[in-house]
Image (cartoon, rainbow, N blue to C red; front, side, top):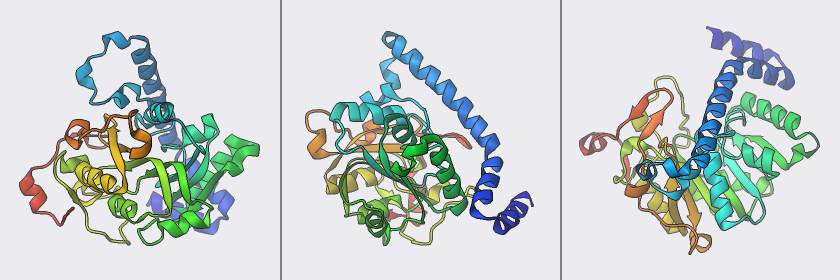
Length: 307
């Protein structure tokens, strides 16, 4: 009922007031996010100060020692800083889609604290309006460096959207988070050559199976009644696609959410290429807690595509 009332109210308001209403509704979530980020920043500082006490068994790759949350959902902020400290940056540009309201995503730290520029997109008009308001208030005179666009990104329109906002060829970072067609969208992208790609993988599919959901341009993620077996692609499927595109798997975050790929020509001699089995972490979900991978028989019973 509350969601219905809020939807009706937003439909009667202009863009500015609608964004303010969304910001008000999101306030409890932001307080929770801020508390989590402060806690994990403290963890990152402690790990750095007492690195000699760390158990090597905690980490599957060098990336995991550098995990840190500033604006990211998990330790992605620290991982990205580590990767670019190793391979360097070229144009300091990014594209990220599936950013919600832009306050918790993989590129906000680079934009707000390191002066990077780029494009962020989400399918929700109200959340994009809120994101625009947020970056305007945080960056002030530099707000134009972060472009915001409301769009449902698909395999058919990804390149069109990138070009229409002035992005083509090489850039430093692409981050994909649509909780569904991630594999198919990355497969279709050909207009840009990011040096680093971050893609969500579905850890429920396990470290070895090479599967993805079938492509459906109308697929929309919903937290209500969401089935973990009906979204995204396995780590092995994404790693195979990455190899076809000339990328190596550098690692995954310890919450079992995102995989990090580096283009082979810039990774050579600098970033170790990992197998999915070595890099994999099971999912640690805010909602479900620790989620172990399903059995092969369960995978076979679902409508999944082997790739």
